[in-house]
Length: 421
Image 1: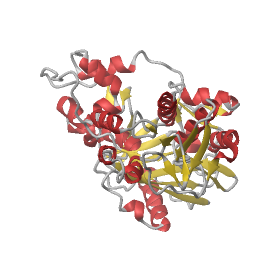
Image 2: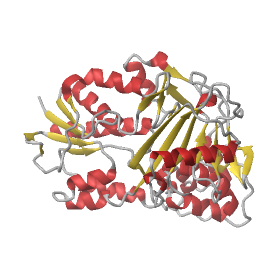
Image 3: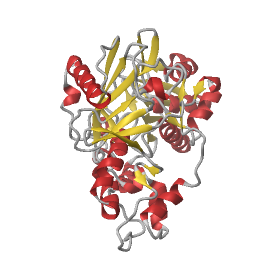
Image 4: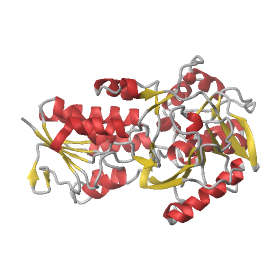
């Protein structure tokens, strides 16, 4: 029986550990913190358990739905209520978004010059869209969407890494950006885009923890990783590192310098999420949330009306997110300062000034990887520098969402098993 260590008990580490256990390996999960879940976290606010990290997943990808069915949680998956977000721009609420791909519209008029794209090339989403549609579309559509996913501006995020389907259409010679977006989106589909768990992601974490039992060691930081795979005084046949890119760089930098240097090229943004419970009788607009255009005089990058977005949550549930790559000052503020900023933004955006009944502040330091232009080349360098017996998993590879993290964790396990065989 192979003895495998998994470092990190977020969703990537837990799924990797489960698949290794199912393959017959003896698994030990090392988690430096006192809880599992990583950036997935649920907390009680009053009488309701709410997600204070990610709250939804893409349903068009099968990974979460398949895992939920495997763990007996299929009936706990819920759909959104069908409301749409609005845009806050020029100091007021504007209309909702049309059909877009990460904010890139499928029907906007482009400049009347040929689209220039070299197959295999890369660029930032902002640069590509600005060259075809101008600054306003970037600031009022693309930037709000990109910052909500990557906590970065559109000019920082790679087309090829963040929107591979769009890059593929451009590689194939799409005559315009709009046509490439329409092809990438496919035919309109009325089925729900997102899903969530009725009891929050904690339901998924609890089910995974139950399957793994005493193989999870909490409060067990790993100071470094050495070839030969000695961790915390024990020897292992292989290791899966399921922690954020900056932490991987710190773990391997001394003993695997090429790998450490490659992983260090991926920056990570810090963010904060303020979750508020407002009185049940508060009047809120019939929206799922509000995205904020660039240059607006508010601190939050987005506001989610979770109680409107999901029928199973109390009406007055609101989430405001803060922080972008290179702009972490507000994340470092005191809880009271972040809650005050959230209330100010709520008043400015929606005109809601009522006192919340409960509030929770959650910070995620270096929590959101940013896919800079050239990200795919960085991943190739990481792969080339990763020795046999070591595999990496996490949101910095093929997508920051939970489905992508599950898929990457399963591929990491496949690599480890192949190395061991």
